[in-house]
Amino acid sequence: MAQGRLAGSAVGWGVAGCGWVARDHALPALLATPGARVVALHDRDPGAMARVPVDAPAHTDLDAFLATPGLDAVYVAVPNVAHREVVEAVAAAGRAVLCEKPLAADVEDARAMVTAARESGVLLGTAYDQRWHPAHVRLRELVPELGTVTAVRIVYCCWLPADWSPDGRPHDNWRVDRSRAGGGAAIDLAPHGLDLAGVLLGEDVVELRALLQRRVQDYPVDDGALLSGRTAGGVLVDLHVAFNTPDALPRRRLEVVGTRGMAVAVDTMGQTAGGSLTLHRPDPVDVPFAGDSPFAAQFAAFTAAVAGHAPWPYDAARDLALHRLLLTALEDPGGPR
Image 1 (tube, one colour):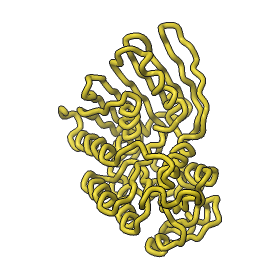
Image 2: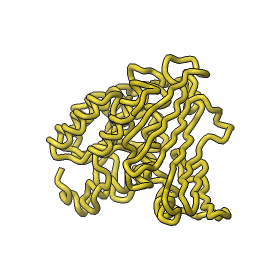
Image 3: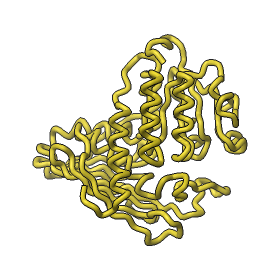
Image 4: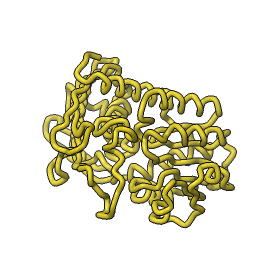
């Protein structure tokens, strides 16, 4: 899609995959985004579409969905293994596409998606919503005050048993099904930390190793993982991600450590704009931040890019490189990288 084509008109969005993330977070954010309107829904399950808070044409057939008049961009939130099929179809239809993380269940599919978007000349973005959390935006501004950054430490954990449900109703928890997710806690949660470390530092992790854990939950994928990496400039990056940490415990923390100070964000890793940010130099000072939810800010930025008002700042090729790095580490947990 050529940028600028939609200048002066609302960007028509479609949502492919109407599970709980789309229902509870993405669609409410889209509905509140200036310059955006939801024009179509797609899911293989009619019941899923019936539960979302929007009145728009609903299609179980992907081709019919993509033929919706006024469709300019598609948010893809289907299970990981289905990303490639949907993204390739969206790209072939000439629509911009914002795909949920991880980019795909494996590297081959992710590479094919990036290639399809490039060859079709459409914008492809990965929905790393933590890039857009207002605390993380503010933290990125504070990084120069920390001196020489030596380490980034992230804890991003939750409680996700096999029978987990977002609302108490029967729920298909595909995130713990290897055939559809590609793995467990590591492939679901670690992409956020890898992306965020690079966004905060301005340089990405280029070496990575992983240790996987199956200790608490009753399913055949990892319920916890430790990942350690290093950026090209030598910053150490440590990630603890898990599906086995009770939600009542402290379980979401981000630290950026430097030679002149340390920034600590608590309870910011998540779908809302909450949490706290503290700057230690060495005495602690609370740092205020304000802004939209990560989903709202993300959709506003992508809508602006599709409309031609501002560039999308994240290259899909860079997202693919991080995805390849992570999956290579997960294929040989414990091995050197």
